[in-house]
Length: 202
Ligand SMILES: Cc1cc2nc3c(=O)[nH]c(=O)nc-3n(C[C@H](O)[C@H](O)[C@H](O)COP(=O)(O)O)c2cc1C
Image (spheres, rainbow, N blue to C red):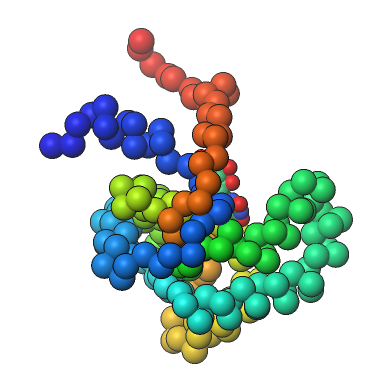
């Protein structure tokens, strides 16, 4: 049985990492992280996650795509985002913090399942993977930014060729960039105010 204090300590120590060493984690480590993801619960046990693991030359190619697409969307984002977030997003599109591995997470949506259940199931797997990174000595950051260029990402990964995609059932949710951490950011503070609503007896 896992020690209770260790478990809570693990949760508390997880932080998004945005700067990585260039060393590539061994394949078996990435496989364990993916297995951890696939231990997650899912609506009707559909296990509707789909992961695309990008490394090496393909990862370098993605950075070029990401940089190119930034030029296409930066003007729109400049109007939408406050300056600090704009600068941050720009940096992300250019470097991904040098992360050597990028895992793109998709949901296979089905008319037999509620939309939010499908999406939530994939995010449960994503959180498992966040925690698995930690125990493997890796860091990661879950990123919604690739959604800004989701059509390009779908093409780049070959997702557009898949039957599930052609039927309109595959949806990009996020990327998880990962690698060995090259910084130790402070823990982002947590708040409980307004988040908890207890009902019934004390
Ligand atoms: C669905 C989702 C999307 C996110 N997208 C981004 C992103 O595009 N860029 C980024 O730097 N961080 C992104 N994050 C990370 C959050 O900014 C981060 O989790 C939050 O600030 C709390 O910090 P912590 O993870 O260090 O505890 C995302 C996190 C989640 C769960």
